[in-house]
Image 1 (spheres, rainbow, N blue to C red):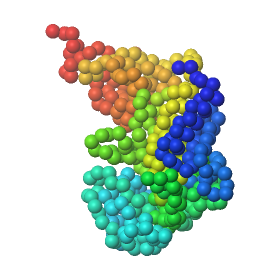
Image 2 (image 1 turned 90 degrees about the vertical axis):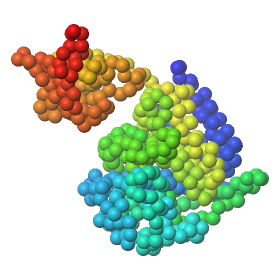
Image 3 (image 1 turned 120 degrees about the vertical axis):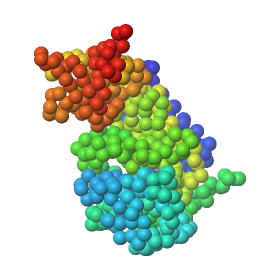
Image 4 (image 1 turned 180 degrees about the vertical axis):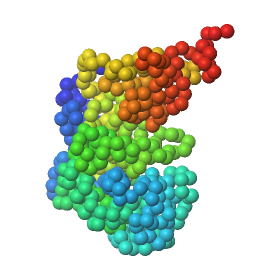
Amino acid sequence: MTARPPAEVTRQLARMVRQAQAQARVPAVAVALRRADRPLWTFEVGGSGTGRALDAGTQFRIGSVTKTFTAALVMQCRDDGLLDLDDEIGKHLPVPAHGELTVRRLLSHTGGIQREPYGDVWYDAAGPDTARLLAEVARAERVLPPGRRWHYSNLGFALLGHLAARLRGGTWAEVLADRVLGPLGLSSISVLPTDRAAVGYLVDAYSDHARPEPPLDTAGVGPAGQLWGNATDLATWAAFLADPATVDPDGKVLAAATVEEMRHPVSIVDETQWTIAFGLGLIVWPRPDRAQHVGHDGAMPGFLAGVYGRRGGATPRGMGAAVLGSSGTGDAILELSHRLLARSLELDPPDIRPWRPGPPAPEEYRSVLGRWWSEGFEHVFRWRNGRLESQRVDAPAGKPPAVFAPTGDPDVLRTVSGRETGELLRLTRDAAGQVVTMHWATYRFTRVQETFDGVPAGEP
């Protein structure tokens, strides 16, 4: 597909935003689309509801997108040796009940604890403070056995936020600012609204009237949904969740391997249609062509947010989108972040990098290259991009190969991605040093197709 001129691309994307805003009847919509190979694109439609014009700096409430920041704080604690994901939360946080729930279960919403803190917290002017929240954990129910299935819990994430704060010796807000927002330069993201904040509304279903929703400080429940921010900073955060090596190359917030761990699906949201998974604090949406959208949606009285990064497939580096709206009922805009990511690539695909010749494979691996057989199936081993790779001959188009890394022993390699990740590949050589047999995850690989007792398949 030929890329369209930039003005035509942004015109079509802007039209998508205008259409979504009009159809969903949202007073204000602000979007940002970030990709490392193109300039940042922002667009706004509507009014902020204040004396200040709606612009790229306008803050919106982002609701449960907050959970992705809390999850990052917890993973930082793990990486720094302050906790293990399989620790019981009672080891680090003084709770009167449910202390046996593990950090991992709460991050993946598989702990089985009830959705909300005790009481009707969403209908109070302010949520419980931290002390009350922790004390009233004793009145919360275990509505499902741990690990049985996915069950969303704001209470669980509130506990995680306070756990991380306690381990760091500050409040959740202080630790978040110091360890995530500051290092990434996300200056618009705050616990309380600033003078740049939009008004959130409930739009009447039977007229065009929009009534402001009352402000709600979630207080002790803040780690689950308190934050505000603008679309530009949130698109950067979305890109970080998909491609931390590009957005945070020095690993100031998290190592790329840790974010990859967070993205790995732990549970399925809908057991009948496997269309959405949950990792460690992150929603993972599979998309066509082996791509994924990674991030979170958010909803608070008067506000909706969709913040997702894209990875896999033909995706440029550092790609993320944020869509923020000032209506609690305009659900149609939540799909807009996904549509913008996909449509921008249809209109303006990433540049194709030319292939260039490289050095030959290291001598110790040259006799590995080529076709091998195992369990009756044919595989090809190649040296690409400075690494040894393997793929079944009949693998579907676009399926990533298995990739191997040296272990220090030239005859033993470790699978680092793809099929059999983590398993060893052992090489057996003849007297001349040529590899004649391999064992991958203990399964034998030979140059000809053989039965399990070593007889060539073509023999009588």
